[in-house]
Length: 442
Ligand SMILES: NC(=O)c1ccc[n+]([C@@H]2O[C@H](COP(=O)([O-])OP(=O)(O)OC[C@H]3O[C@@H](n4cnc5c(N)ncnc54)[C@H](O)[C@@H]3O)[C@@H](O)[C@H]2O)c1
Image (cartoon, rainbow, N blue to C red; front, side, top):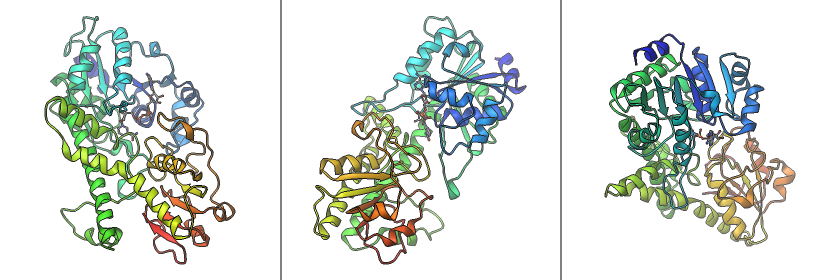
């Protein structure tokens, strides 16, 4: 352990980052910037090729960051796991989605851990960053990493969990650069915790918070995301309640926000998306059931949020009805299909669910999203794959029977909607204050 600690503290350690996506790529960049040697591994040949050429495949990660990596002798991107043989530290940032029955799909993490177990040479640290259920690190990953290789925890293998807290394209108060976000670290044993804390401290993170165990760190991540999912569901539900009372939720939120303590604002919307909020809390509900304890708040919140896309479609239907039209055969344009503003990520996006529901009602759908010029391959929206974004021009808008603002990217000139004649269903209250248009708040 002392050798490895000394290597980390003297900046001589080599870190292998497994998975170079939204989490792994910025993390590799932070480690590299701090002077560490970094090898990044990803199965996606396109990403690795782009990285080697200094090109970015994640819009909010600037080309300057990528250039730093591609020009450096301390960084290598590869599609071969063998190229990471002999690294001092593995940091795993692989996907942890849900399976068909909302059960954790740990196949990426477990499958690659099995391969890594075969190439561990001893005196190495392994850190899991992928979100997971409590106990995944100290039971499942530990068992896999030590299978058939005689390595012992705390002697020649060190294992920790450090949750990722990325906030892609966060803005305003939420705009936080990766290295500034306090980095939680929990070791499976004390020496693993010490090594992992040293890694992040020396690897460029300004504020490392070492907690007692990997489980505490795992649960903290789940608490953080459950907090979001529950509060978003609450405000989405209150939107529906207040609407029946003819009260505008947005005005209520502005009023409530004046309280300087004991209140945190969450905005209603078309549902939740991304790789975290719709997924992570259900890792916890699954584990809770296994130990015979239900986590009902999270389950109810999940149902409320999941029902929002169909509520939005109801609003589209009513708005068309008001102007004497049926959904069937109507032209509807969706504005913004990313799961949140200013990101190029449409994983689990409610926009895709709204789109599918409108297609089921036989509407003719087009979309605009400059961050997502073409709908990528997804697991659940196969019929949308490959559809291309169209411009938000007056000409395109004039041909629509309805427009739905699903995700309000900042790069759109919203004034243009002032000249739109058809109903505009606004799920984000982005058109607040614009006069003379048929806006339907949804
Ligand atoms: N995106 C976020 O903002 C965010 C925030 C907090 C936590 N997380 C968690 O971090 C983890 C990673 O999420 P992400 O958003 O970076 O996912 P991602 O899909 O953007 O990145 C995963 C990367 O792993 C690669 N990959 C897939 N299978 C692989 C394999 N077998 N071997 C090597 N590479 C492989 C993919 O090509 C991809 O580049 C998840 O557990 C997620 O819940 C994500």
